[in-house]
Image (cartoon, rainbow, N blue to C red; front, side):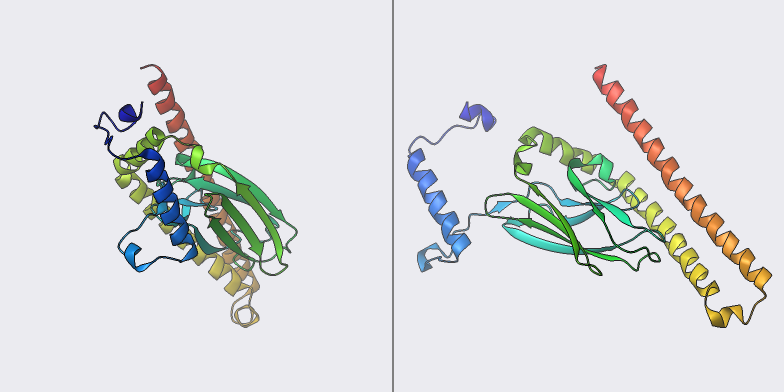
Length: 258
């Protein structure tokens, strides 16, 4: 069975398996505690993340927090902000994988943050922390900085959710659709640049020094165009999401017929 797991490679029977496990455990314990002797300086035994870990952003994209092959244990932090004006809640969704869109990766869990004040876009900030301890348990937390409101999730068996074959398949798919993902990232980045520009123009139109320089009618026309453009970008995001979902269902159906 062990030989089949390693694709038929011949087993080295001269090594005592109990001793090998004991040596490996001792080396890992020494690395975790920092108690590495001079004789062990050239030896390194590290457990790493098989796939990247991250969060789904407001555009449905995967924001990587811990990169693939990061040594365990590890702790990484990233910052986020609200995506629209007067937002008072946000879902924090955790994924693993290498694809650009979060929905193309493996979902691990999510939680909802409530209770922060309504404000303009980008003003409410969050500090998101990913931590994998020495036992391979994933802890994800998010803190809204103005109120200190915090929510978290612990995923004890995240490493056991995917088999080695499933991980290899996900990596192969990420390589196969690499150019598609790059185009999607570029498209979303361009759309976000437009949204940032519109929100900046909208805020400028609400400043007192601007209201004194242009007529009220002209200012209202510009604000109306800003709102119209913002709604258009939201429609574009929804339309693209539905198209990607339909595409995924078609591919899944085609695969089931094979």
